[in-house]
Image (cartoon, rainbow, N blue to C red):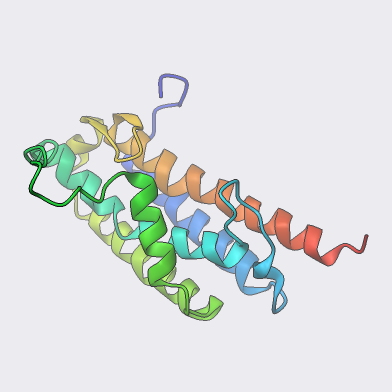
Length: 175
């Protein structure tokens, strides 16, 4: 994350608001069926990418908890008699895609909208000095809290929105 510019709390909030508004305006206007096109390296279609975006949005306030309290304690290793752990970021993503398999685009956008509002409210209520605390996200992004939040909640989401829009455009282009 050394190549990422420093981000203040106020800039992070502005980026979150703008990014959320852009996501909603761009994806709400897509024609029916446009989100069914494949657009992600693991085979997700646009609606599944939107489910991923909506599902991970609620996790961002947990990064504030990590900055405040340190990383969660690791659980003991599984024993030969215990079930294998379900873990890792890809496992989480797959579970969320399955969880929202029957959700409509409108429902997914509403989930995103609600979760983004919670993220913004949590950041607004967080003491400014905490945003300089070094953390590591579940996806391995390291740096000051404000920079990590900007990367995962703004830049990562924007990349996925572009994936969806590119796939929708390809699906609409004959040939």
